Length: 469
Image 1 (cartoon, one colour):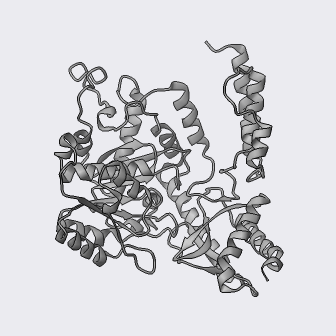
Image 2: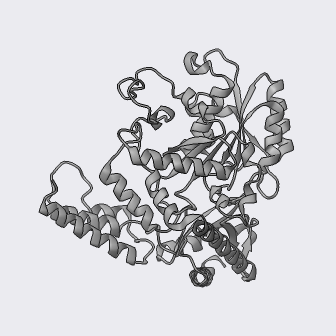
């Protein structure tokens, strides 16, 4: 039973959450020293509920407000009330997804979402599982590819085997390289394939790289295409890549962690043309589908592979095959205990419906197009890449700034915006050029927000210009 004092604490904290959501300040300017001075982060002594209230206040005060329309920093943004409710209910019920008897409703919701999302990819009899993020999704896909190519490794290990090679674009997510390490493939056996001027993997270069690998005695087993690269937001030519993979009988994975949401839009889904020919597909709903972290699925054209890679001894205490006919999703998951991440996405999709989600995704594209035009019309902003998705990459190059200083000046403006809590925009490099990377992923983002952002960028540039000339 929950006590009256506990109820009061919960009500107080909920009020603080509402205040946090109403506050539009993007970021505190606190240093590490200031946070440690203000907040007792040590563990050891007990605290009362009054102290807990103060700690929550301090945590919120010192946290970046990622739901703000001034937050353009990462590949996620915004606040979903249904996603928040789903998180609360998942936490309160504390069900784990390994067996139906433990999570009956959540099991059915996850199965419904997996079927829905598999169909959007184009898998006729697809399946999959929720995983803790896109990196885990890519790992699971590479593991499945290894199992498909060399199933004996699951029992005997890789000792004495010839090297296996995986192929990814030069602009792939770094989790591909980490997955090779985790699987014992070896990071040297990740082959980075050349990209074109738009950042898309070149299918002919892939074909050539595979041939070279085979000639050297290696065994190609995995190709990772990217649908929505982290920096430029470009989409590899999946259909053309699939032809190369079929030619050599190699597993094709699509890392659509960022770009998968384009499938929700009839206007933009062709960015992922050819996905139906892939063997696996990673898709993060906590990115452009506005869900709280984490909410990711990895989908498979043939889901039986999930049972193969998770077929190990010692599960009899949990899975009672002779006593139940209901689906136990833990049999196809690398995890044992697992949160009901499906609930928040299911509630949000029920609320929006297909048409509502499509409208939201189309709006994000419209905001990206508007931001692109703002850069083009500016006298001091210069694109460093085409805009393919929701990523806008540009430099700040006013008169008086030499080419060698443009990158440093762009980063200085970005840092000043961040310092003064005007906006949080990330910076990166495109072809060796430092630039801002603006992400339009917030469903509440409007033209006036972008107008203010670009006004702040240009005024901050004017302020800092004397220091660079």
